[in-house]
Length: 119
Image (tube, rainbow, N blue to C red; front, top):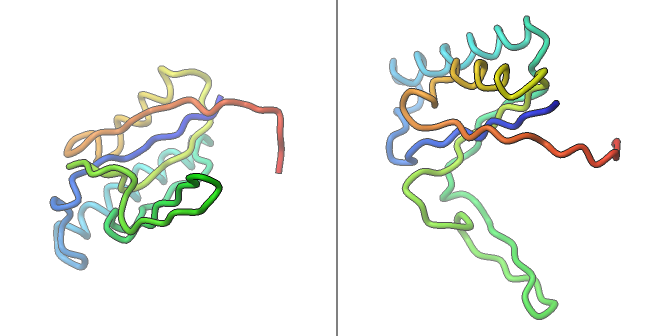
């Protein structure tokens, strides 16, 4: 079963790019991704740009309405994702616990519905 890890972290709590803290954080994520890849569960993973750079699209009265910024104003925003394939939720939770976001933010673990469609 596929599981999506949504990595939540306060936008204002990100370390300065290139700083020792930022380098340490990326190294920790790299180690977690390497371990998942070696175990054969990693499908994809990537950080996201700041939520302030988002554009939100809605269709209202058959018209496209664009809004600068995230869909919801929350203190914590989704900062990245990891997609894995695991035997069950327990295995997925084990891998989610290896991510730095679990310590200083949160990791939302959601199963991906199999629609039978392939791309």
